[in-house]
Length: 109
Length: 116
Image (cartoon, rainbow over all chains, first blue to last red; front, side, top):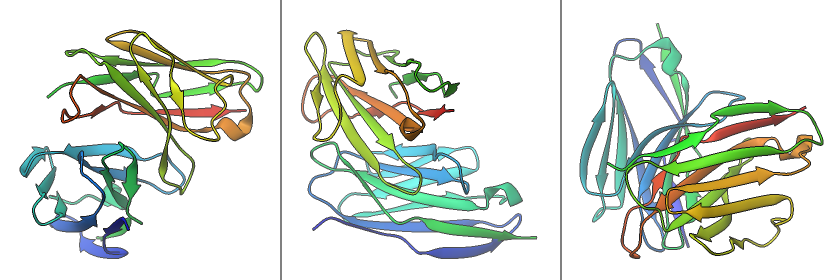
């Protein structure tokens, strides 16, 4: 079956760095997404990786290793507004998005 | 990388009216476009797949007369939600790719539709 695993919840301190991991087992692979979702709001697109390596975009970076079925989202210089759920999703061979359950990130002052 | 522009990013409309969402590929020719929908706390679900110049293929359970998809050119696809109802309030996202099964699919930023 298809499976996306990511931690349920993480806590970090304002100004610090946090890494949210995601492992996946899917039927085919056409890319991996990270979304940020604040409670009660639509998800916001953060990144899309289809090739191995690190993609940096401001304070956020996303890494992919297709051979390991692994990705992480790295958030630097954490701000209180970064408190949200972070969703990992993989596009399978049928271009269907398979979603992880999300990681709730709590930022403490 | 390639850019897909989706417009509007959010829209509020009255029940019974129609809303059009545009999806444009800015620097490549999108032979295939996909439309997804996400309800709160649920996964994105594929609604339909459209190839340029032909009718869209709708997923089971998606009303083709309600969600009109037009892919008239290689750079533009539109999704029109006709006679919108509050239950149509959702997050809609498009993606586009060019010819070749191994090419990347690029995603728009999504449209948040609220029907009041």
